[in-house]
Length: 152
Image 1 (cartoon, rainbow, N blue to C red):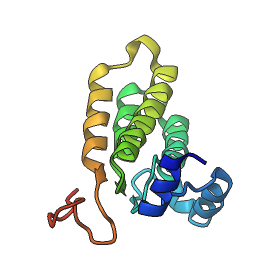
Image 2: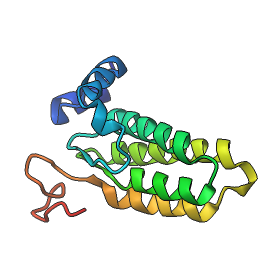
Image 3: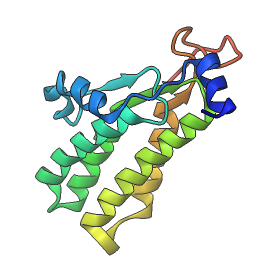
Image 4: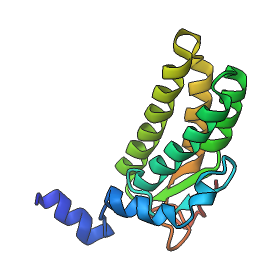
């Protein structure tokens, strides 16, 4: 284990949840992961293991129900991504989480709509992710090194 990894574990308690456990925990609230508008807050989101799995499940529903209409797909995919929130205390994890979610949604969108994919839609998704995946301390509900509250 590298010194940097040890330091992050000691300083922040950074430990990533394995996919098997992520799936098992989300299966406990399966019905909620199948609702496009169901909200999720991950108070220690890391690089997004829970959030990416939630979005995968929600986008499966969106694809199944709305892939024949690009406007409907965009509407419900936007609603799905807008229903997830994350707080993370390590700045590079915030960036990784946003990138993972954006890349996943972009790939799914482009698979279905190919050349008809709209850059504006991806820009809107990225804006929502910048507002919903935040740098902060979920224990104190403040921004790091500050008394400013976390505000979504």
